[in-house]
Image 1 (cartoon, rainbow, N blue to C red):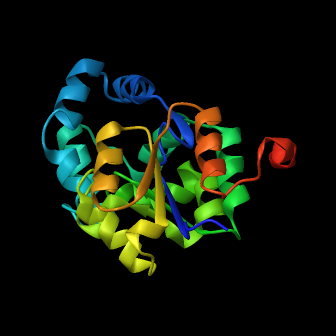
Image 2 (image 1 turned 120 degrees about the horizontal axis):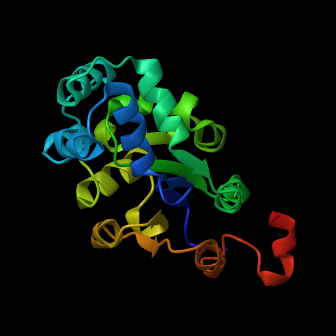
Length: 214
């Protein structure tokens, strides 16, 4: 039996390929602006990090801020559609998450603002299927990765000790933040490495049983 009772997954570049350049091109086509200027104005300042920590605190306020930074009116449906098209599911990783259901409690924790939380059913339906109401953006906790506080808060919400929790992310600084809080943590590089980590924790069957997960 594993000592781990709670597993938290990051979303982008773990469960999905994440193409920020596609998003910039789509917004450039929509607005007629240069992609580099969009990147600087929307993501180059402090606004996104603040939104990921819960300021602004609502989806509507986030969209208002996004439109102001973009300098172009964009509605929620368009924002969601671009967010959906910039993501490509990773079936093998999603299947590993599915295989953990019933073995441990699962949650998603992605550094994002409240508009992404509202948009998840439209842009990441696999996340809703697997994690349901436990699919979270960092803004819900008033802190963002790698701050150890966000890990303490999500563990506390579901009643798990950090030492009995595991975390998967593609960024080293986020792994360090989780470990500082006491979690076991895996830096995602590829599917094989993640499978080995979860197997070592006793959460997935060994190599002779891996065909059951395909």
